[in-house]
Structure formats: C-alpha cells, structure tokens
Length: 312
Ligand code: NDP
Image (cartoon, rainbow, N blue to C red; front, side):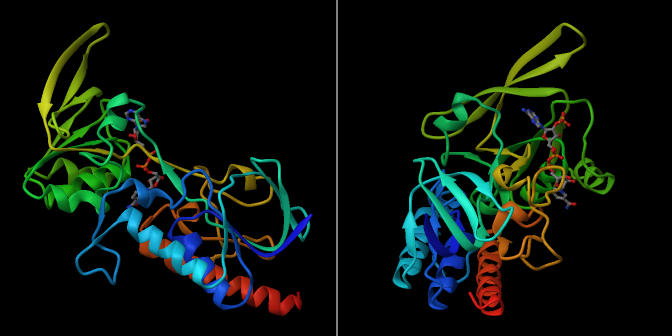
C-alpha cells in the first residue's frame, strides 16, 4: 500500500494552505481534491474580502492560484474522493472512489461543509446569477437592492440583519409560524424596519431574464388553504443550514450534533494523534476563506511537529 507522510483530504482554502505549508516543510503532502475541486469558493463569483486582492478576484481564480502555489512546493494533487477511513491505528488507512488505498502518518481533514439548498431547479439555473448561500461573500453586490433570505435559524437571522445593512429591503422567508433563532437574533430581525418576515411561506420557484428578478411564493393559510403570489427581488440567499462533510471520520472523531468536527480548543487537533481538522468541516461559526486558510496553516504546522516528535 502506498505510504504518505502528510495526507490532506479536501481542496478548499484550508486544504491548499495546509499543502503549501506542508510542502515547504518537506512533508511531501498528497492532496485529494474531493467532490468539489477548489471547494465552495468555486461556486461564488467575486471574492472581495480575501486580503491581498485590492481589486477582488473570482473564487475560481483564487483557488487556481492557491493550487499552483501548493504545486510549486511539491504537493501531489489527485482528483479522487475519499470513501472510507480507518483511523483505528497509525498509519491511518484510506480508500478512494477508484478503489485505490493509501496509508498516512498524518492526516489533515479539510473536507469542508456543503450549504443546503431547497432542491429547486431554479437554484441551479440562477447559481451565481442571484442565488447565493453566503451573505458575507455576496451581500456587497446587493447594495440598495431587494433580497430574500430563506430560513428561520440563527444563520438566517444573522444574514438577514447583515444584508439589511446593505440592501434597501430584506424578506425573510420562514416556513414555520415562528423563528427558531436565539431570542437576541430574533429581536434584531423583528425590530429592523428593513426586514419583512414572511412566516409560513415557502418558495416554489424563481424567475428573471438574465438573473433573479423575483420569487414565486406560497403562503399557508390554515389547514387546507394556500395563497400563491410573487415578490420582486434581486438576490435569493439560502440560510437553511450547512452539512459538514465529516461522515467517514465519525467512528473515530468527535463531532457535534450537526456533524462539525470538535477540535481541542482553538487548535486543529482532533484527539486522534496526528489527525487534524481544518476549515469549514470544523468551523460552525466563521466559515470564511481566510479563517479556513489560517486553520489549514495551523494544521500543517501541527502535522510537522507531530512527525518530528514521533521521529517518523
Ligand atoms: P438551523 O438548523 O438552526 O436552522 C435552519 C433553518 O432553516 C430553520 O429555521 C429551518 O426551519 C429552516 N429550513 C431547513 N430546511 C428548510 C427547507 N427545506 N425549507 C425552508 N426552511 C428550511 O441552521 P443554522 O445554520 O441557522 O444554525 C446552525 C447552528 O449554528 C445552530 O446551532 C445555530 O444556533 C448556530 N449559529 C449560531 C450563530 C450565533 O450564535 N451567532 C450564528 C449562526 C449559527 P425549521 O425551523 O422549520 O426546521
């Protein structure tokens, strides 16, 4: 079986940054790109909040640059998806979707999280053209425009409040007759004159010529009564939760009730010696490219220290 000193699973900002640091530390990192090469950023358009790009950069270009930088320091980047992990004893064993297997002395889990979508065809049709799952990433493009946010949890309330500071009006589309968010977040939303909460509403579709221009809504009115109508919006933001891509590690690694990997304090240590977690898979709070990159850096430094201490 192929033996790897530093295995990195995932190719978002966390995975590639870990690869840059591990490569420069002579750990011969091998990166498996996973389901979405380049990670979630490749699904957004312009990235304006990653330091070092005063004019902004597209998500795809940023990830391509990070990939090249990792390759410059010797990272071996492969396109497979990890389907099985065995972290019961070091070296740790992995199986990939093509049936190949490797064993590794250190592992950096940087598999990210996937935003949940409603499952409408129109979400795909208007991806990058008015549909977004990240207000911090894309809110800036909706200054003085009208947007809708879907969801009733803390993320939805936080995103609606953030968007209200930029947009002229925010609809919050909530499927239940109440918000699930913490009281303080609810108060912020309900007291914000720019936010209109549409309780007991669902979205049936979106419409628009060259991008989102509106949404088809359905309002539940009593047991069997429904009312259908359209709202005019420029942007449609999903905030119905994220799913961390941690399933294959769960038998060995502690996760919270949603599935985020629980690390030791602010370190990337997972509790399994030599196995570290970086980026969104271990971050329910910030979920930014720059915070993911920083945790990838920490994970690579920890991996290097672990190998030195173990004299591997
Ligand atoms: P949650 O799971 O808490 O909330 C998801 C929301 O989306 C719910 O209102 C849910 O509705 C709704 N929803 C889910 N699926 C659909 C659907 N198909 N159609 C319409 N609505 C849907 O996710 P969050 O991302 O908001 O929060 C995740 C965790 O992170 C929570 O523990 C939260 O407290 C925490 N968090 C904390 C923050 C803070 O403290 N500042 C900020 C952000 C998150 P329903 O209620 O009907 O199920």
